[in-house]
Image (cartoon, rainbow, N blue to C red; front, side, top):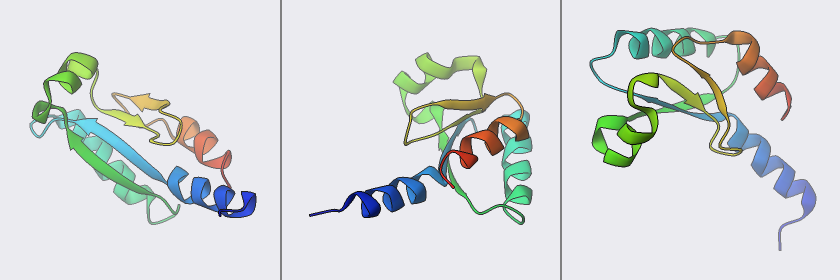
Length: 96
């Protein structure tokens, strides 16, 4: 059985995992990836890049809105097109 303390730790760990929806041939996507990697030198989080072209449902959902940085925990959009440091900081602060 998982205690509420353990559940909180699992949510906190999961909150530090982000998803970036984008495309391989997308300069804004590459810019956000680079910005996130640079930020990882200062802030503890991980992210996974998902190419929307691999799934027609993702293409329909995100289309030209990419890149989109999402929380897999809350399914919340953190930002799109450009990395919004304030929005990301606000999101991560909820779980620290």
